[in-house]
Length: 147
Image (tube, rainbow, N blue to C red; front, side, top):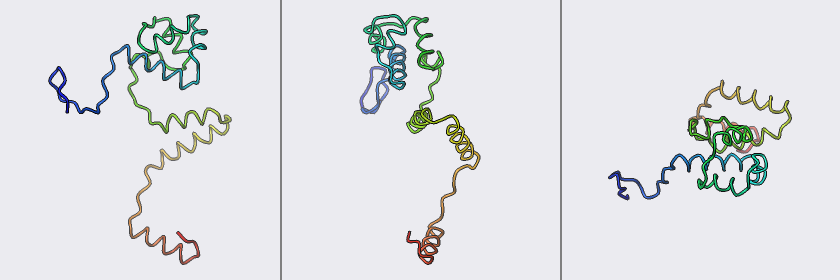
């Protein structure tokens, strides 16, 4: 453990806390990359030089409130998300589901939604006990279905 100036002990592998500017710049970069947009595309949308996009994604330039509003619209995120209001950490599987579902037809997305709602209502699947597992394996073997 390493002693920090405020006399708290922090494990060495703990990532440093981001200040507000770093947090904002990280979220802006992640949102752009998530949508597969280039810095050039974003710069053209905002009518600013590409280096300005690079600068605010690396916390070397402040983002104006009008730019942030435009970026939120472009990135399809609420304005508040970039200001840290939504601190919910997304599971990588949720992000993968989102990307995959985006490419589906509207009717297929409805099917996926109905299935997700079914799973939510069904609750957690109870874990079979070891004796139940043994009985299922024995039954499958007896009926010609190797486990």
